[in-house]
Length: 82
Image (cartoon, rainbow, N blue to C red):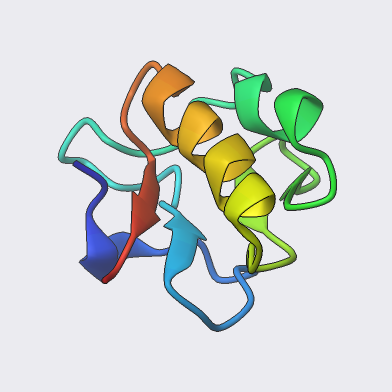
């Protein structure tokens, strides 16, 4: 489960987030590119390739797409509060 206390600084406000790569709990983003290639409208990469959320999903389809990324993340660095 993503560490909500180690959110990437570029995440936009909202329930969905990606963790900072410096999260030493083992759940920090490893720049694998799964989320920002699978859902580029919602996830982007910073200058180091680490993911962050640029748009919060609102519709059922958008949420389903983001859930797919959350489940595919190899280090559980995508989180959803609520």
